[in-house]
Image (cartoon, rainbow, N blue to C red; front, side, top):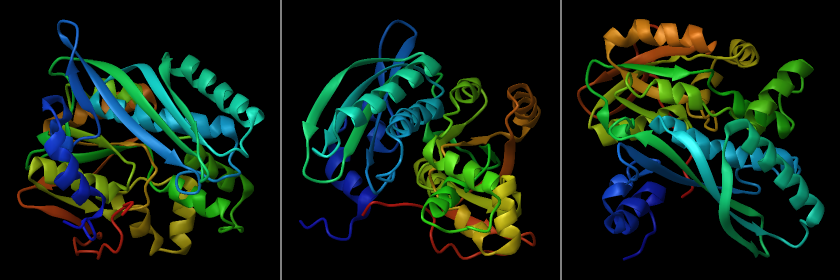
Amino acid sequence: MSAEGLGEFGRIARFFAPLAGPGGLGLKDDAALIDWRPGHCLVVTVDALVEGVHYLAEDPPELVAKKLVRVNLSDLAAKGARPLHYLLVTALPARLGDDWVERFARGLAEDQQEFGIDLLGGDSVMTPGPAMLSLTAIGEVASGGEVRRSGARPGDRIWVSGTIGDAYLGLKVLRGEYTALPAADRAALVARFRLPEPRVTLGARLSDIAHAMCDVSDGLLADLGHICETSEVAATVRLPALPLSTAAAGIVAAQPETAAVLAGGGDDYELLFAAPPDAEKAITNLSAELGLPITAIGTIESGAGVRLVDARGDDIPIAHAGWRHF
């Protein structure tokens, strides 16, 4: 049977989900769970970066390495897991010589120190096409302490850490847009694209608060859609509640239509989670303790799908909920 038209998640569901073992969670989550030492599970996740798709050819190798590490640690954070180790696969064209690889390894070393992880092994091959880098991250969580996508319940509030849309705008800046922005704002947006901040500490602290959680990689609306589909619920997001940085807010003020685009922009690597209403005080206290904004942006409801609404509660058409590869 032809795979044409199935799309990324349709292909996963039809061809690969039937191959998954119990720890694969039906391939409906961003990580797998493996029983390990008494009272603990290993959490395993893998992500790839492709030159020209996830990063630009001119991006510094050190930052490419760190982005590769951090997008995977973000998946561990979304499970509430503590990072431990990683495996690495590099498929590099011949034009990327030893100097590029040395700088790439320097970035890995710096993030190993930053996050307390180490390399276990991997593979290195040559490719005639663009570079492809894949990292498998391994973490640990107390048995039953992991936060899955599947636990959201009607009545839960939807929260997100940090700010949304900066990475999307940062890529636009790298491609020559928003030249009128102050240099500091352009630099801040580019930094969010090139160097995400995995919310590892926050994720672990949410393990006994959140009912469901994922990180924002494809786009806030798309990733919330994954939670809703897996949890068999619906969601409503209030666009005016979306947390924006100073730079992003300035762009939205000048171009109001951009706000809805940022809700599907992707590459934010913030934590998006559903929690019961009585958890508000605990979340507010945690936000203050970590010095990290955590914003309530909507509600979980009965039904299916994700709605985006304006200040009056009227539906906003969603032209693009997030990134898909196929």
